Amino acid sequence: MNIEHLKLFVRLAATNNISAAGQELALSPAVASAHINKLEQGLKVRLVHRTTRKVSLTEEGLAFLPHAEEILAQVEAARASVGVGNSSPGGTLRVAAPASFGRMHLVPALKEFLSCYPDLKLDFRLSDTMVDLVEGGFDIAIRNAELSDSTLVARKLAADKRIVCASPDYLEKFGEPRTPDDLPNHQCIHLSGLESWLFAGTNGPLTIKTKACFRTDNGEAVRDAAAAGLGITIGSTWSLYQHLQRGKLVQILKEYPLLSDTAIWAVYPSSRLLAPKVRAFIDFFAERYGNIPYWDQ
Image (cartoon, rainbow, N blue to C red; front, side, top):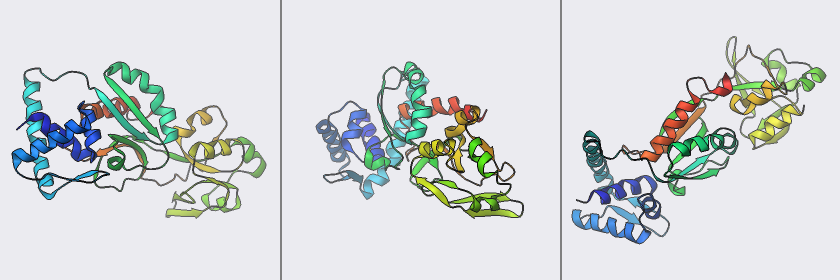
């Protein structure tokens, strides 16, 4: 059984795309397809369903996948035991990330990251639209949300602390709310999908339905509108920290923290065989952000 064929099969299972899996191993789509055919012929069983858009594993392919992963893991362990296979990760790493977070906290670190892994190339999609990793052929996604997709493996990179804030000009003109119950009497700014704000109240969770004078689907626009004095909003400290440091925004309602299960996550398709380039990316940024991210220090 050809080890390279097994590697291709495992990556195909993660991407559901023969071209993407082949590209990772420097194979053309035609050669990658031929390798899968040879693997199926050797096993005398069909491993994948092929359509014009994507491929998916057959029942036999799903049953074979953990065995293929185990074989490759044992091969890698054997190579490592004699000092083989320690070369730098290479190929193209496709990453999907929220636009604001990517621009502020991923892109500035890429020079250092690529200096550590000079054989890697990066292909970023920065969008606030949540993408399908498998359908889009992405290796990894950065998400700042509650996770619900059980088919993905996730590693927490940092906390996503959210606070209530406003500009000094707004507070001088309209006053500062003393409790969450005061918020309905204020102008507020909504990030789409966050119209109700959940606080830790003195008698338990407290949900406040606020009224928006401005609503948008872009977090930077929400932050900048608040800094311009348009109203009160909630935001992540990774987005707000520079405005807070400069005094353009002020945290309010500190005695009533927001309740949220969000964090900054790295997610990738489920597979026991994690591609070295994915592991390198995750480890680099997990260390960079640390236990207390620099934006919360």
